[in-house]
Each structure stands twice: as structure tokens, then as C-alpha cells.
Length: 551
Ligand SMILES: Nc1ncnc2c1ncn2[C@@H]1O[C@H](COP(=O)(O)OP(=O)(O)O)[C@@H](O)[C@H]1O
Ligand SMILES: O=C(CO)[C@H](O)[C@H](O)COP(=O)(O)O
Image 1 (cartoon, rainbow, N blue to C red):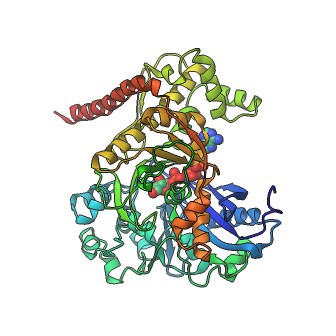
Image 2: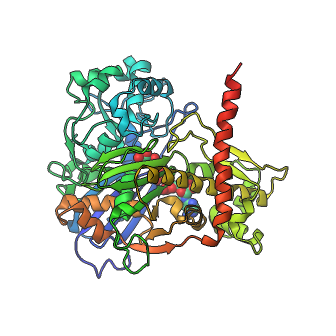
Image 3: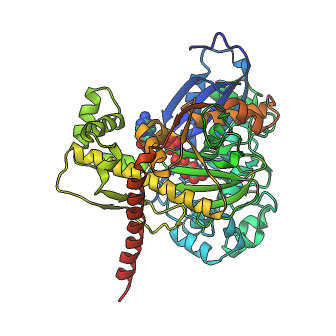
């Protein structure tokens, strides 16, 4: 492994559980990734809008990747371990054994995933209460949060799950519990997904009003009544049992965890940008927006004072960067949407064969194909008459409307590779227009954003990055380490070890700029026109729904 021999010192292990895979990295004090490993994880979709995973499968994958990244090093140099994960709901019984979250009673499937939309009726009823906690989720609670899912379990699986349940964890907190035996929850997960307030704690009246008074009665023991800031050291560190599973020494520091998007935020937002000529240089960190783009995209903006943005989650105090308020905008499916559009096209088998023959990913192939067919024009101009509205899984922000659907206008009879490539481009552009809409909502409410910091799987796609720059008109910073979410997880481990005085200090030392992608300002007029069409699409979709609802 390059550099490892010359760099004795302190190492941290970061573990990132995304929707599709678990990744681990060995990271040094400068934030450099010395080793990386990943492993796919199982997902079940037993019926439409039900998405489930297995906590045992995920833990086993964490063990495989962690063992791989520490192979061949002196494990005594590892000072800390940090976890981040998607904000999925893990259900365990009173003896901490997995409980099925499905009608089939399959105990392997004990996780309701973040993108699961089974609790639609429950979230409508929660929103009808107009309870004051809803102010901190943009005014409307998302079906992807935990309260509607818990209510669904109570209403639908009373005997097989609800009555037997002893512990409901956010996935990041499940992992830190598994590693340490400490069931304290991270402030990040409870504040962002469970309506906990950093200042006031749980609101009894909310849980009583929505029919989950059970939690109040037992002093929130099943959902967490001990709360720690992300990066705090948990208990006595790694237990001997977990140490054996992970191939690490017992007792090393383990951090209170973060949701994956928030770890990505820590991994990128604090980088020293001096020398790149960026507008955010010399400005507070609040002028930066971290965009974590994987299966979904999450838009993380921070502020010194609380800002209420309609349709955007938060403000959440200290949920990502300590001492700052966080607003989180998001698009529920982005990577998943691109995969869906490309894989569902009639020319996909041809694409796959051609990409394989060139030893390229299908996306690298599509990008070079677009370069071929664009001729002398900018590539983005290929979609002058093809427009996509990207809410195939509802709109998370800023419209906060889960009934919205995807739209495509400009279809032709052709089904060849050119057609697929242009549809892929229009989808990527639609996602970038969605980001523009979120930024406009955040700015209208008081944020002032000048620079985007992108990370996650989609940031490996140069077309996706360039379209975000062109369509928002902002420069995009990419980190030196492509796997920035893992740097964020390692920052947590570094904080828990006590090697840095604060999360801010660790961020400044461990996140670094790799590349800056500037917007092509000469194309602005074209994208402004396409944005006008983009906004018309949703206006028209709402009109269609109103017509169909009428007599
Ligand atoms: N090298 C790549 N080029 C283009 N797209 C990529 C690449 N790697 C990943 N992606 C896209 O990123 C998405 C997954 O991102 P990732 O961050 O791994 O997801 P998650 O954290 O949700 O598991 C996929 O949907 C895929 O479309
Ligand atoms: O709600 C979220 C973060 O608050 C994310 O959308 C969720 O955690 C999934 O992440 P990913 O797309 O990286 O799998």
C-alpha cells in the first residue's frame, strides 16, 4: 500500500453504510485514505414502496470491509473508529434480537429502509396535527422519517413486532451500539429523523398526539433517552466481542455516529480553499453547501442562527457541525433514478456490451458517446427538446410533496443508443435543476451560498458534476479523497480518540480540496430557459392532478 510504510502514526477507521453497499477506509491524521474496501448489502422490496434490509447482514459486511482495510498494519496504531449510515429504522426485541418488520414474519428483514414509503396514511395524519415539532422539518414531515414508520408498525404489526420490540434504532446508532454495547443515541439521528430537540429534548405532547404515547410512558427507553454529540467517545470503546468481529483491538475509541449525508458534510465542508480563487475563500463556512449524492442527494447548509426554510428539513442545532444550525434539502432518488432510466431503456443491453468491450462503466461510455454526438455544440444543448421532472419517488425538497411523479416530455419513436444517451443527459440535468430549486428556496429564506462541495458516488461522474456547476452557476469543489463520506466517518473516530480538540479542528486538518469545476457561464441563457420549462413541468403536473380530481 503506497505511503503506508513511510507514514507511521495514528490511524482511524471510518465505516460508511450506504443504501447499496458498506465501505470502510483506513485514514491517517491528514485525512489521507490508506486503504479502502467495499461490500454490497442485501435489499428486499417485498411489495411496491416497501424496502427492507437486515441488520445482521449489514454488520457482517462492516466486519468484512474493516478486516480488509487493516490487513498488514500494526492495529495498535489505530486510535479510533467512526460509523455513519443511512437513516433506516432497525427493530430489535427486548434481548436485542432482530424482529421482522414485514407481514411474512421474515426476521432477517428487520430494517425499514429510509426510502420505504409504506407509512403514507400515517404521515398524513401526523401532518394534520400541525404540531409545533413539524416546524423543524420544513413544515411537513416526510414519510421517510421515523415517526410515521413507528406508527405503521404499531398499526400493522402489533403482535408480531410492536409488542415484542425492545429497541428502535436509527441505523448509525445501531452500529455504534453493536460496537460498544452503549445504546446512547447520536444527537444527529434523533434531531434529524426523530423530532428530538437539542435544546428541549423529546416533546411528550407530540408522541401522545400521534398515538405513540407508549414511548412517553417508558421514558423513551426504546427510542433513546441518553443522547451524545457526534464524535463523542462511547463507553469503554470497542467491546472484546466486536473487536474480534472487526479485527481491531478491544478498547479503541468508538464515536457517537452520524447519518451518512452528515458524515459527507463533515468530510468536505471544512476544507481550506485558499488559492483556488473561490468566492467562499475568507468567508464563513455558511457560504458553502455540501451536496452528498448517492442513491439520493442531500443538500447540507449551515447557519449561525436558525433559518426556517419551507420544505427543507431543519433547522437542527449541532446536528452536523457543532455550534451551527443545519438545514437539509434533499432529492429522494438521484443515483437510483439515473440507474433506473438507463437500465430500463431498450438500448441498455447494447450499452452494456459496448461498455464491457471497452472495460468502461456504462456511465463513462455514455459520457464519451455524448461527446461524440454533440458535434461542435456544448453537450448540455443536446436536450433542447427533451425535458425530465425527476420526482419518480415524490419530492423531498423544497416542495415536500410525496404524491409528485416523474415526467418526460419530448419522446420519439427511436430507441437507439443516441436516444438512451440523451435521456440519461436530460435526467442528470433534471437532478441538477432540482438542486437549483432547493438552493433558491434556501436563499429566499436567508442562506447565502456561493460554492458547492460535492461528494458521494455520483460525484465520480464528471457529467453530473459539470451539469451541477452549469445549472446552478456555482463552482463545484471536489475533495482530494473521492470517498469523502469515509473521511467524515474517520473524523468522528479521530474526535473520539481525543487526538483533535474539536470536530472543527479535525475537519480543517482532514478535509482537502482536490479539484474545482467551474460553471460554463456562456451557457447560462440556455439553462435558464430549460429551468423555466422545468418549473412548468411541475405546474402542469399539478394541473393534471386537479383536472382528474374534478367532477
Ligand atoms: N464511477 C461512477 N460513475 C458514475 N456514476 C457512479 C459511479 N459510481 C457510482 N455512481 C452512481 O452513484 C450511485 C451510488 O452512489 P453511492 O454513494 O455508492 O450510493 P449509496 O451511498 O447510496 O450506497 C449509483 O446509483 C450510481 O449511479
Ligand atoms: O435522508 C438521508 C440523509 O439524511 C439520505 O437520503 C439517506 O441516508 C440515504 O443516503 P444514500 O443516498 O447515501 O444511500
